[in-house]
Image (cartoon, rainbow, N blue to C red):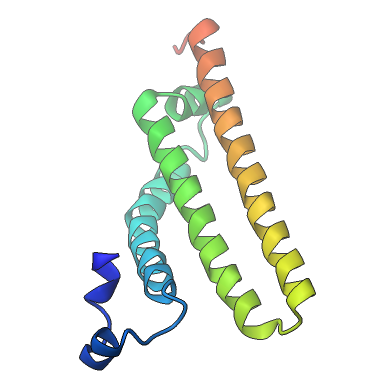
Length: 138
């Protein structure tokens, strides 16, 4: 990957030395997701504070509007991916037995896929339910 070559030392580029060729990409993805989480998290929590005293229908109308739904999905998936990247590093660095490491990494990734799929399904279901049964806001 051309992007990762830019972050390697000149000697490592000449000798093709380095880790298993995924460490730089992993590091870069973790930084990118962290930078994405900052504005999305601020946006999410400010909206959460703004709707703390709102009734159910108002919150659902906010949550299921297309722009907010996309923002919530991007925030959740980005945060989930960032968490998986971070936990993966901890497992790889501190679990030395291959079988346990493999089982933990497999469980982590399967759990993340299931969590992401459930989150997407719930948000899409709420959006579709709001479209089919709109609430009247006074």
